[in-house]
Structures are given as C-alpha cells and as structure tokens.
Image 1 (cartoon, each protein chain N blue to C red):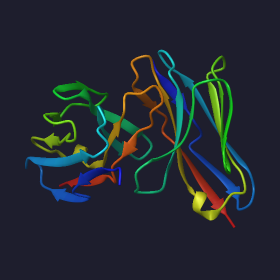
Image 2: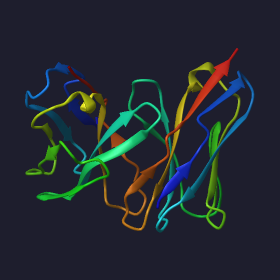
Image 3: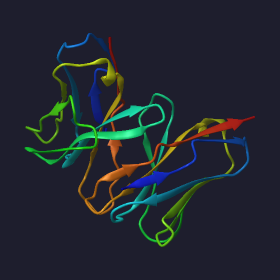
Length: 109
Length: 113
C-alpha cells in the first residue's frame, strides 16, 4: 500500500529552527510537495522536490532523498504566524497526490 | 486573480436533502479534484477529473457524485447526505505540466444533522 508518515505535532520556540520529517512508501515517485495549512483554511503550496537535494526558498527549505524515501521541511527564524499544519504529499506513478496526515506546528513565544 | 472558487463556505443541512457544492477555476487547468478533510485523517480524495467529461473515483467516493461538463466547473453532488459526510471539503485544480502544484479553493464546511 501507499503510505506517508509525518509526526502528528511539534512544538518550537519563536526565532528558532524546526525540521519536520516525512517518510514515504508509494507506487512510483514523481515529486514531493510541502503545503502549509492554517486552521480552517485551504492548504497553500510551499515547495516541490523531484531530485535529491535541498531546495531553499527564503526561511523555508525542503530536502529530498529518493533512495531513502525521505524528505524534510526546515523552517528558520520561526515566527508566530508559522503556527500551522504542514502537509507532505507525494505524486505517484499515476500522477495522483498521496497526502500525509499533516504535522501541527505550535510556536511558543 | 488566478483562483479556485468554492461555494458555499458553510452549509448546514438535514439528512437526505440533496445538495451541490460548486467549484470553479479561472486558470484553464485540466485537472480538478475534490477532497474531504477530517481531524487526524488528512486530505482524502473523493473524485478527480483529468479533463472535460473524464472523471474517476478517488479513495472515498461513496455517497458522492461529480460532473465535468465544462473545463472550469467541477461540482460535487451529495444525493442523500448523511451525518458521516459532515466534514471540511476542498476543491483543487492543477495544470498537467511536469511540475505543478495544486491550487485549492477556500473550503466548504458541511454539517449534516
């Protein structure tokens, strides 16, 4: 079966760095996405990885290792507005997105 | 502005009363999809459409219908809603390019009593 695992909840301090991990087992791989979702709102696109390595976009970076079925999202200089859920999704061989359940990130002052 | 528009945002209805949630996108995207999101379960796909007149079941299609008569519209129909369909629903669209992310509508919070 297809499976994406990410921690249910994480807590971090304002100004700090946090890493959210995602491991996946899917039938084929055509890219990995990270989305941010504030409570009750729609998910918004953060990053896309299809090749191994690190993609940096401002305070956010995303890493992919296809051989390990592993990705992480790195958030630097945390701000209170970063409190949200972070969703990992993998596009499989049928070009369908398989979604993780999301990681709720709580930022404390 | 490029967007996916869903209506209504909130809906309370009674068991068995047919309802339709509309979804429209203005980006000329081929791909459209409906999801429901429940606490602890993440996004689960209900139906998707690769193009006009082409629809396919997702992971949880029971109790739902869709149609894709025009490229921009992808309504979700609940013929006989039941309380277990109480959920937060999202419509999403995407282009068919090799690197595409989904654009989501604002969501519809449905309560069936």
